[in-house]
Length: 89
Image (cartoon, rainbow, N blue to C red; front, side):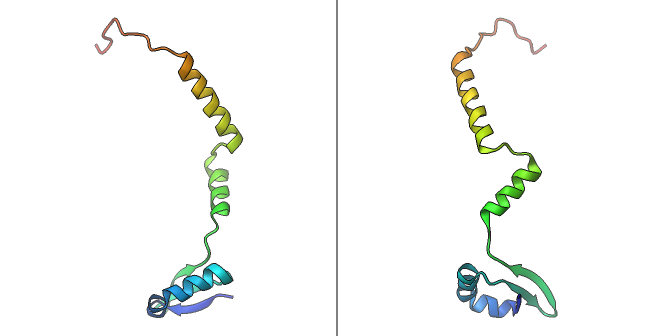
């Protein structure tokens, strides 16, 4: 259950609140005046990364490694062709 904490109390005891979030997996709603302005929860990097990959269409690690392998191979095989003509117009 979320606890409602005033911003000034959170500011004055931030270390305690961060430890409670980190170690106890607690969460807090921050209140300024009569309004709730923020929610403090533990950050789950893996969950966020999975969502980014899902919605952004990012390659999987296996696909990225394969692309990287082919890019390295291509760089080794391709040689720059000297320009004989100025094509800028």
